[in-house]
Length: 381
Image (cartoon, rainbow, N blue to C red):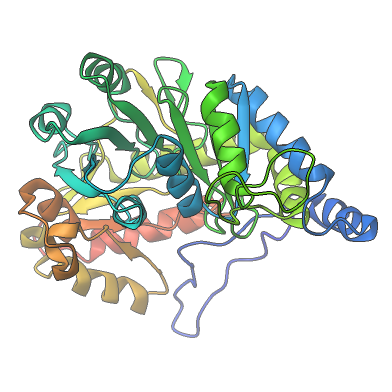
């Protein structure tokens, strides 16, 4: 993995310059994109079908439908299962807000379940407590690449006759009991945004093995048009299409799936080596049944040990040339969502830091990040 890695950027004050994220190109992206451009198929085109088939085959799913973003994939999934006004969808409190927004966008109500304090995955018992007569679906979100207890959630959904949708935007290639994330639900949703393990710039997809759901999602994705008559619309639809140019980029990226998995696992193993059992620093707990491929490595810091808040610590890391991101803010902290208190989600949100985890990250850079993080603890720790 040598292309576009570059030398370590050193600032004048002898600190490295390490961004939080950077896309990685393996070598054939320009070739595939140029081929799409030269073919004149720049909107729909053959690369879309190719990417859908390869992605579906890899996951053992019957169908894959590409979308314009991971958010539109979630929107499409909710529309396909008929979620609408008067319905409720149980969703974890600790998540990037897209799943919540899409539940609201279709006219339904989010029912917020808190998370496990160690794995940061949704607490199944809390999910069950939030199920009501209005509940139509459970949405499982896999945080940072960890995977929820999908066996328990699948049993719960089946027993209560609910749809199960997986937001696997952060867990591409992660596995639970040997099965890939996104394959446990009725629909699995993915993102190929620029920071993800595979990128098409923006973009996403849904996978399913349910033919009826697949047909409905294809219809909704393309303005509700079907049949031999052009501009004949059977249902309310949207333009959620991925372009042929984006799909060409995705095909080039997907050819290197095994290398991506290997690189991501190496990054996590290095962070684990340097940060495990360090006072004031705690990584997500990974259960033995989970084989994670982390979108990014996040840690929970103890403000008492560092003597400053999480946000102050992030600013100090930035002064050392290290860009980080905060944990996701739960809906309960944002007035617009009028959500009830979610104590565990709020606790993790205030203490989580997402560290640089991009594919080209080098071992010296990881050592530097870990060294600076540990040195910023109060003296005497």
